[in-house]
Amino acid sequence: MPLSLLLLSLFGLLFSPSNSLSLSFPLTSHSVSSQEASLSLSSKTKSHGKFPFQYSNALVVSVPIGSPPQQMDMVVDTGSQLSWIQCHGKVRRKSVKSMINVFDPYLSSSFSFLPCNTTLCRPRIPDFTLPTSCDPTRHCHYSYFYADGTLAEGNLVTEKFTFSNSLTTRSLLLGCALASTQNRGMLGMNIGRLSFISQAKISKFSYCVPDRTGSDLTGLFYLGDNPNSAKFKYVNMLTFPKSRRSPNLDKLAYTLPMKGIIIGNNKLNISPAVFKPDPSGAGQTMIDSGSDLTYLVDEAYSKVREEMVRLVGPMMKKGYEYAAVADMCFDGAVAAAVGRRIGDMWFQFENGVEILVGKGEGLLTEVEKGVKCVGIGRSDRLVTESNIIGNVHQQNMWVEYDLSNKRIGFGVAKCSGLKA
Picture 1 (cartoon, rainbow, N blue to C red):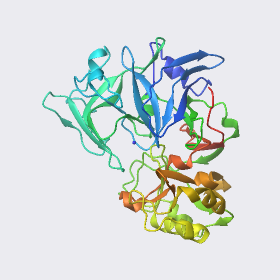
Picture 2 (spheres, rainbow, N blue to C red):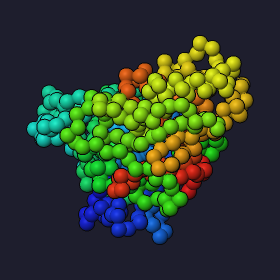
Picture 3 (cartoon, helix red, strand yellow):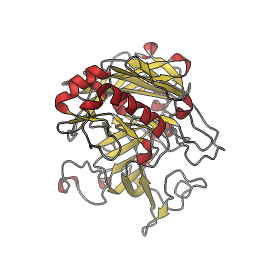
């Protein structure tokens, strides 16, 4: 589930490897995100743009789009390609419920529909899950489905991202959703050629997800260089040739060479092959900011569950399963005791890199009032054969996507209350 040039390619300069300029976005963690906030700019040694980033089991940023800009709530999703906004035809904002952030194309001088006869509408190699089509008005129509069942469909359009009077992108391709099961848009951040970062030629970005149970729910999101990166541990991404044809492989995802899982002091008896794509692509391990939970293939999930039963089995909520994917759940009243017995959880990667992904009660996520679950689900229930590291296991750490060097960086941090 684009940022480029202004006049003389200011945005290209901003993300050039030869300089350290960056944009930073404050982010907040919220169980329900219905707030809006405005852009502010600061000029210190580096050029920074600040945005609120809201976290309601997804990373939500308010982005200024159009001319003049309209603030649009968008989920930052490293697991998908197409960026899209809520854009319900001629419906004006005042007539739409405040929970839905709707873009009004008739107020923007830079908005343009994509005609059916463009190569982007009818690509030789389809870029989207479903092929595009031509609607009755001869505008390019798209449909986009996500693994969790989310649907967005509408028209492909071009529009500018306007961060300030002096920082505006060129027109970028995105979706203008006429129907969606989401109440926010999506900022596609994978490595596909039509993603936000690819169109904008952004080579690096990072975020620090705040603890969703904390009192201060503000973290930070960078486009460009991160001043903390000297302390990061890096893991090289796995890449795949474009010619590879594997039915279960997502070649546009950020794929990591995961090796194992440690709970407490016990390294689980899971074959490293479980985390590596086989010839069909099954077993691929991806990091995804747009996924709330982490999902494991059956062999890995079963081993984690066995260990949880050994440690806290009598405290599990009998017969309970969250969203048909997660069954390691507990009454909230015993969550603290459960956390103490479980201890820490680590994910292991190539070259001896071990990342602490949660400790104690922080390994549990509230799925409904009075119920908390270990934030891991079965990937086969999503009809996928992949491992997905969700944002529940990215809390209180920097996660940096360094595309130039094809690596992902991790750095322990207290993400709540970070300032640009």
